[in-house]
Amino acid sequence: MAMPEEEQVYVLADTTPQCVFRARGITKVYRMGEVEVHALRGVDLDLFQGEFVVMLGPSGSGKSTLLNILGGLDVPSAGTVQYRDRDLSSAGERALTEYRRFHVGFVFQFYNLIPSLTARENVALVTEIARDPMTPEDALAVVGLADRMDHFPAQLSGGQQQRVAIARAIAKRPDVLLCDEPTGALDITTGVVVLEAIERVNRELGTTTCVITHNAAISRMSDRVVNIADGRIASIDDNPAKIAPKELQW
Image: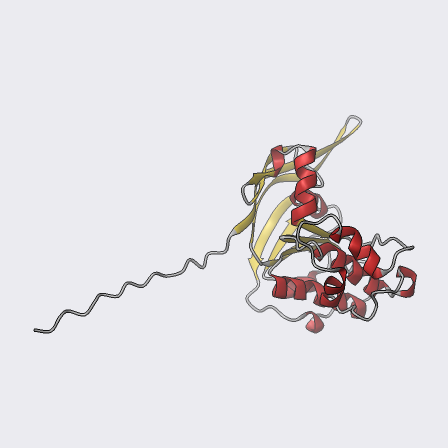
């Protein structure tokens, strides 16, 4: 008599992306004397592991304020923001400093490089305080500057200086890369090179990446577009047809 075949059980893998940031009801009010400026008005937002998000909005819309709160540079007036299992909205300054140091890489519009240090030495400033850093050489190679490591900022173009700033941000292997108008001071050709470096970090290192900009063209390279207006999220749109940075036109 034939024995029954063993029943095979298949377990489907959970492909739901992990939530990295969960913001609920985020409000930010700045008081200037007797005047109150409402920068954010009840923002709800989730950001997920490994995604590339563009936050789009005009100057004064609140996008930089939101990015600063996600990065632990500022705290909300009301609402909650969680990074994985950490409550950033109630964290003290010491906890926020530790969070920024070990988990977040920042890239700003202006490069903030030290003029008297080479590209390698500028990146080494971060690797010396990180837990498990890349070498400065490896970080600079990721952004395509392996042949410019010993150049000083004055010997580099604007785009090259911005790529040094990106290398400095990623050298500590951050979970999150937050970029505030990273191409704002650059022409389109140079800006595309910088965006290619940011996209490579997201794709190859799996770093959750958020770029804020007023340039709508950049949103075409993202996974999702968060449109911000007057301190509120106007819409969140998936982008099913991402394009490469070199295909962008603005």
